Amino acid sequence: MVMEIDSSNPNGEDGVNKINGHDHDSDRRHMAIIEPHSELPKPEAPAGLFALPPSPPSGNYSFKFGKFIRERSNNFSAAIVKKLNSLDDARAEAEPEPAASAVIKPDEVTQFNISGLKVVVKLKSHGEEGEEKIKGRISFFSRSNCRDCTAVRRFFKQKGLKFVEINVDVFPPREKELIRRTGSSQVPQVFLNDKLFGGLVALNSLRNSGTFDERFREMLGRKCSGDAPAPPLYGFDDDDEEEESMDEMLLSVKLLRQRLPIQDRLIKLKIVKNCFSGSEMVDVLTHHFKCDRMKAVEIGKLLSRKHFIHHVFGESEFEDGNHFYRFLEHEPYIKKCYNFRVATNDTAPKPAVFVGQRLNKIMSAILEAYASDDRRHVDYAAISKSEEFRRYVNLASDLQRVNLFELSPDEKLAFFLNLYNAMVIHAIIRVGHPEGVIDRKSFFSDFQYVVGGYPYSLSTIKNGILRNNRRDTYSLAKPFGSGDKRLELCPLKVNPLIHFGLCNGTRSSPTVRFFSAQGVEAELRSATREFFQSGGMEVNLEKRTVYLTRIIKWFNVDFGQEKEILKWSINYLDATKAGLLTHLLGDGGPVNIIYQSYDWSMNS
Image 1 (cartoon, rainbow, N blue to C red):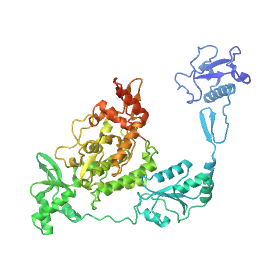
Image 2 (image 1 turned 180 degrees about the horizontal axis):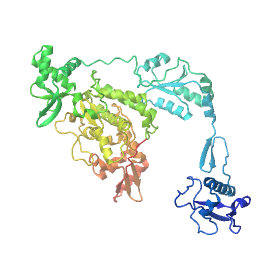
Image 3 (image 1 turned 30 degrees about the vertical axis):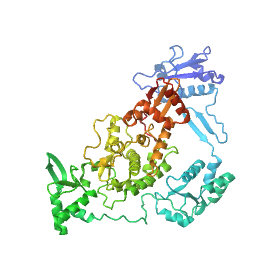
Image 4 (image 1 turned 90 degrees about the horizontal axis):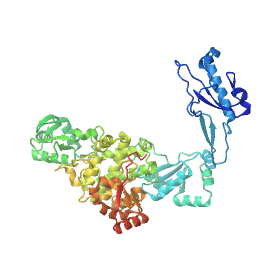
């Protein structure tokens, strides 16, 4: 072990200048070397205690380990500790700065420098002292995608005030309470304990008057009474929510599940599990309902359209005879679907428009509560424990048998954009963020939902639906084969702006957002403009080089030739970048394109 000793302190002569009987007045700075026995472990200095300089040449400044043992044979450990302490004391006395210093100033962080230890102390500000006096509760009613509600939320966060948010889009029955308390359904509405304070205008007026802190401490100085708006509780569904009605065909489905001979069969040289024939199903229906076979076939077709049953090869809707079918819960892909729990959702399917709007509102509320203001950072751990996410998972089961074919083109575009972004958040929470190439392939292909009776992975939504059944990067096969029913949901023309509305949970991807069916096109343009102005494209006039996002390289078939891409992107750049790029494209000289590196780390 090597120890550095600074003997510049005149008060340390006795403890420093003489070691093992040697006088070292001629050299005020020397080294003491302790060489442990070869059969004993070498003692190590605590990490960060002091720096170890290079070993000096051996000479009069070292003493033999054997001699040290003979002198301290009765208490070897005590001898080492004593030597170390004496050397540390001498070094500490020689240092110009004290071992522990503290200069405390108001509203500043004070740092104590102690050997091997770092202590940071911060004085309480007046605001923090005031928080201790606040015994009441701040509550405010809000809605998703409300600009004024966002302003109120940001205001309370900047003030460091804790608050309870009641989003009536996430908790619809609480809207009745809002109307009862305020006489209106307008939001935001802030309550201090059980007293209505008002909305954003009232907050701004109080802040501009300069008496906000004093008034709030005064109004929240007493404990909250039972008449104040109750915070949302985790794990409890709304008591007054309307009971979901069961599907009208549920009686027939239950009968068939009990009576049909469901078994594995050899069909077209393939083992097909858990299936039954059309004739067997018709026999059960005619025997139980006392109807003819034609009526039974009509019942079978209705069950197929409602996605209770499917043809094992997807060839036909339902026919009598030697055609084979199985229930949705017996499909081989169902185990990979994270919105399927134990059994099929047998309630009557809700309209796809309603489910899409509800998905948008809940996920928007999640982002407003658990993401940064710019949506670049998402707190997945907090989302996983939230009541909003629990309700989203329940909502996802409503997608199992929803009829997507009744949606308009804009409604389908917004629906699948939102579904993709919601599934990414769900996937990161359930299976974790992928670390490598193989994990990413599994992440985008294996995490699935069953939607409208068919499986959808992240890759299927992006490449199969939104990109009109185009191959993924480095893939040889298209997502959908010929005759796949899901092809009917694809848009007639690929919109390249979709790539800037999809977030895959990484730092280089566009920020996460959710779209409305009424304004999806305008919102996509806004998302594209935000992405390009936030680093998606950089222009270097001197080097005549454009640094472009790698997303365009991966999906260049959706954007066109490079020169056309540059002209197209001018519409989404800020004035400075657009002017530089226009100059490069207009002077007839060559323009270099370099694709940026992609950061796959998680946006948390």
